[in-house]
Length: 331
Ligand code: AHR
Image (cartoon, rainbow, N blue to C red; front, side):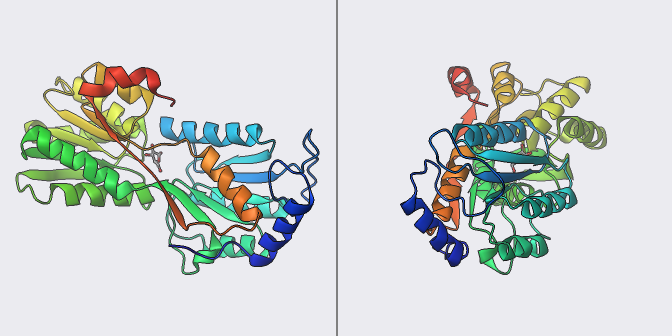
């Protein structure tokens, strides 16, 4: 779907500026007090509101955006919200007050953003969403979303599992943070994927907040409650799966053999766990969103109209491909 780009007046002004000046990073309509780059181009100031550092994936995403800012000579104002959406809202307000040129937002949850995004729009500051989507009545409140298809990821995990188990599984599901796009959509995709297999059942489902420690804790509790029935753990991310692996071992069982473990993200430690035979499969979800986010900023400030969503392609890896792929992993 095409959508009109962020405020046309800003886009026009930036396009004129870009045409008039020799600048390596396009745009930069606001005076945020930033200086010039070595080549005389204006240094952009970008605010990045990050959810936190709950997972290896999240840490890799932060690094990707910081690295890309440095590579393009932009000043990055970084805010770690420590898992709280209200901290993200405060960070966005602070970016607006500082007059940044654009804002990158990786939102904790899907709702509650309208008031602050209206403030950004009123200040003519374009907002680029990375990784997770939001629900807003007015789609012009953000320029574009760069993210994976989380429903497809959940479905991929389910289809792999159906094949592996011949359609028979008693599953514990470790959900991501409540209200987060990937938690909602990975749950849906997985449910869709097992729907055609009546002997695949989710016997318990609980949030582990995308964290290793909570994944372990929740798995311990669920294993105590459901004991020998459990044949599979499906985790909405690798870190919770790694926690589950510890809990399975503590319960005297062999992860990857007695209880199969399937997850999403494709971080290095998940590949190590597959090589060790303890994780069975992971669906890659790339956190390396920095280059695409900065391309989007450049384009919108230059007056280009962007697609409302750019979907990042994902693939599934299992133990049969893990060792070969491990040296190629970038996060
Ligand atoms: O939004 C992406 C998810 O958030 C990743 O799967 C997870 O690891 C992260 O914390």
